[in-house]
Length: 122
Image (cartoon, rainbow, N blue to C red; front, side, top):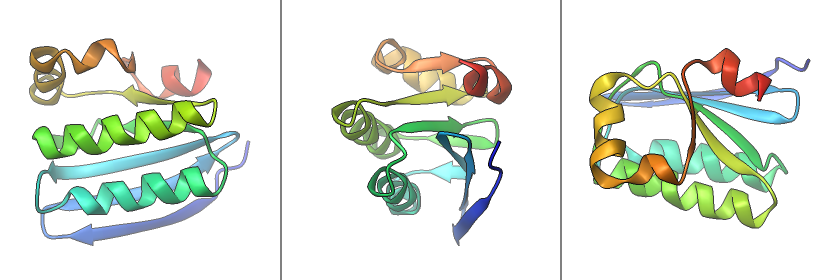
């Protein structure tokens, strides 16, 4: 498996790391995903899609907060990935973040995995 690190970005309350795992791009946001930090996640997701990685795995295990802006970033990436024949898989959501997806019904449109390992094995 290719385990090359692509890079990371950091602005205040959010750090985003990106690496390639085989045919998937693994994007790991850490911290708070909100109106002020959403572009830090949007840009690497779009870059991965532009590079031909239509299967995006978002490792949410270090994501402490997600508001509607963050949710919209993930929904936008899902639409673009599906248009390319791929999808967005969410892994390891903390309860506070999972609750946002549950309340909004967004959990129904994503493939959600308990762990990153499960998402990569799927």
